[in-house]
View 1 (cartoon, rainbow, N blue to C red):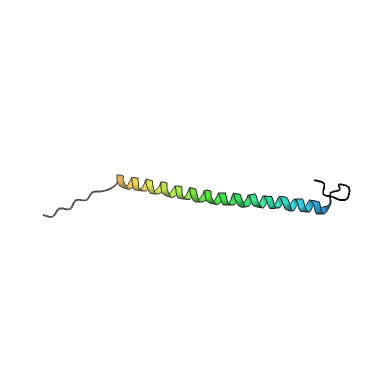
View 2 (view 1 turned 180 degrees about the vertical axis):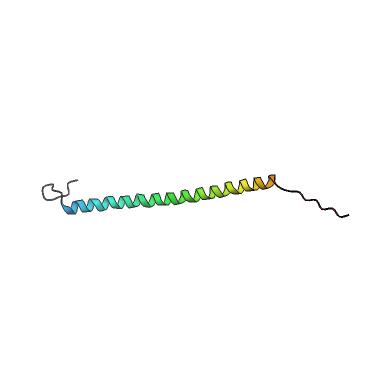
Length: 72
C-alpha cells in the first residue's frame, strides 16, 4: 500500500484520497441503512393497522345489538 514515490512518506494528497474513500463507503452504508429503516417503518405501520382493525372488529362482534321489529 505504498503508493508514494518519495520514500514512503505520507502526503496530504494520500490522506485526502483515503478520507474520500472512507467517506464514500460510509455514505453507501448510510443509504442502505436508510432504505432498511424506511422499510421497517412501513412494516410496523401496516402491522399496527391490521392489529387495530382485527381488535376493533372483534370488539364490534361482542357488542353487536340485535334489533327485532314487529308489525302488528
